[in-house]
Length: 266
Image 1 (spheres, helix red, strand yellow):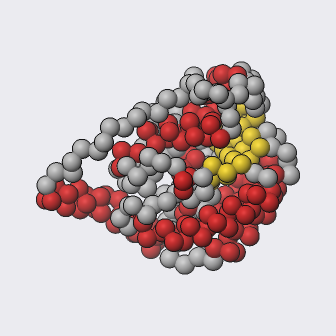
Image 2 (cartoon, rainbow, N blue to C red; image 1 turned 60 degrees about the horizontal axis):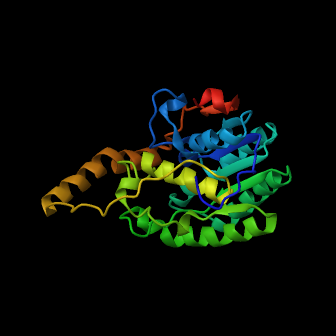
């Protein structure tokens, strides 16, 4: 439990929207839909402690672009009458070769306005600062512009921002899955705590305090590790982009209808 936080915040209907970040990719659990747990499940578990009747839906699907999230998930979420919504969108767009960020943010602005109009508390995530990471670090300038425009939207609609860009501790490969794109179980656990903290909800999540990273070994070991990552992730990822195939093709939302959190997640 986090000291000094309110224990009186109670939510009844939580809906999580987005892409692989919210679906939970990188945090495997064979007992759950799509074989994943993720930070959103963890948040729902904690919210259900003080709200035993909490319902939870997770409409996120890996690989979804912002327009797909808007088209497929916004109205579906509103129909569930949530009082808490989380949404992470735009990360896959930022990795595309060409992008009109102003136009994308304008569409996101309209969608977030629809969510805000429901009266629900809406938590929006900024893009992550990947400047420390090879390959993905090239997205940093584009992500910084996206974030600045997004902050204006969040302020205008009175939404809640979880500023992933400014979170400490994620510049560590142990917080990421082997593909280096999705958070590991440790990363999802930490993110769940961050969400609950920004909501000012007391919780029992205590993320592991990582010791300093061990040495990386010899240069030859480093080259082998990089070559394996290129072979197993980067080449297939580029191939999907060239072929217009998404990792989310054929994937269904994990919790498309509201479920009783205490029962479904126990």
